[in-house]
Image (tube, rainbow, N blue to C red; front, side):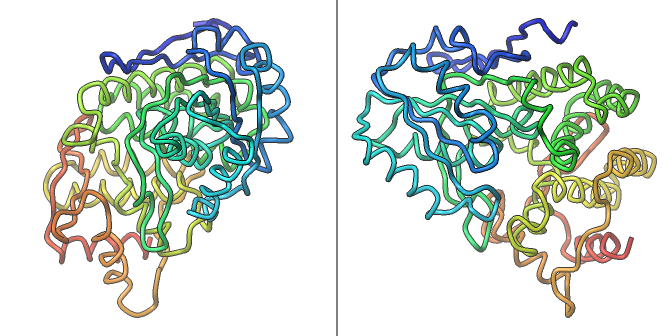
Length: 369
C-alpha cells in the first residue's frame, strides 16, 4: 500500500453510515468535503496549539463550500475538557448567529474531537459535525465511533452523548508536527487492538515498531487504516456499547483511574491506557485467563514503545483503595461492581468482574514494578 493512496474505511450504521478517509495532504483540500450535505455556515473548533498550524488552511478549503466559515480556539489540554470550554463553543456559535444550518469541524486531537462532537449533539438539539483528527490517538480511536464527552473532576468522559460524525478526515501529514511524546501516547490505542481482536496486527506492530516511531509514512498509514477497520467492525455491531464495544476499553478502567487520580493532564491519556493494559493483562493472568508469556510479551512491547508500565501511587496510605474508589465511578461499573476488560485468550477479550483482593494485589504489584 502506498501512503499517497486514498484509503476508505466505512462505519456501517444504516442511514447514519459514514466514511473515514485516510491519506496525506487532504484535510485542506476542498475536494475532501464535496459530498457533505450543504449547510449555510461552518464552525472550525480547534485549540491554541493546532489552530496556528492548520486552522487557516482548513478555513481556505471550506470557504468555497459554505457561505460563512467561523473558527474558535480552545485552550489545549485534557484539563480543559470541561463545561467551561464546552460553553466557549456555544458562545461562539451564538455570537455568530449560527442556526441548525451549521456544520462543526473538529480540528485537533481527542479533546477537541470529543468536545466538538458533544457540542454538535447539544446545539439546537443536534447539528452535523466532521472529525478532522490531527493526532495519532484521535485518528486511530477517539474520532471514530461517535463517543463524545467532557470530563468531571471525579471521572473521565462521564458527561456526554453518542453522536456520530458525518465524515472523518485522517490526514497523515498532520502527524509530522505531532510531538514524539504524543505520537508514542497514541500508539497505546493502536497496540490495544491486537490483544482484543487481531494478534497478527500485534505481531506486525512488534516487527515494525522502529518504523512507526520513526514516522515512516507507509507504516503510519497501515496502523491508522487497520485500527479504524477493527474499530469500525466493533462499532458496526454495537454502536452504544451494550456489549461487544466495551472490549475497546481494554486498559481504560485502570487508565481512567490513573488520569483522575493524578489530575487530568498530568499523564497523557495514552500513557495511562498503556499502563492500564499492563494491569489488566496481569489481572487476566491471575484469573487464569491469559498466560504469563502473553503478559510478558505485551508488557515488553509497551515498554519498548516508550510507554509506562509502572502504575503511579495515587495516595500514600492505602493506595489500592483510592484506585478502587475511582474505578467504581467508571461507566462500565454496575451498582458499584467494577467491570474489567480482560484477555481470555490472545486476540479475544471479555468483560467481567474480579475479586477485590486480587485487584488490590495487581495494583500493589504494578505500583512496585
